[in-house]
Image (tube, rainbow, N blue to C red; front, side, top):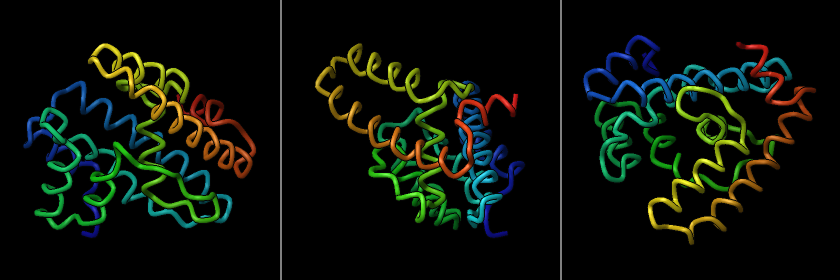
Length: 177
């Protein structure tokens, strides 16, 4: 098996005692990223939706750990899921997104993580507002300009996707409800 399927990912999340609310977030990120990938694939792209599903489901497997992205990536590497590990390792700091002509699986998992709050697709604005407020609460107000720059980059990437699929991400995701 090249990538763990949904059932195996759920087993891993349970085995590593990932909290329920984090599992809900991972499911929503995976579902959002796969929805976008499937739509892009209808327009001539060739994205690996099995990799996107697995990396999305497992991206926060170690969320309760310090540097959870490193811990999760190391765990996936040990299990032989090297492509998933690469995505998990960069999901917190990924930048910049690829040009739409070079879009890849990492782009879509990271986009999912930047548009999903808890277990729900909320779009970029609401998710980034949450991240900024969380940084301020945690005594890190200097993070705001960095976060806003990543938001700007993400907005450009979303715009490219929307041009290809002929609809907004919000409309695409509403169709999934």
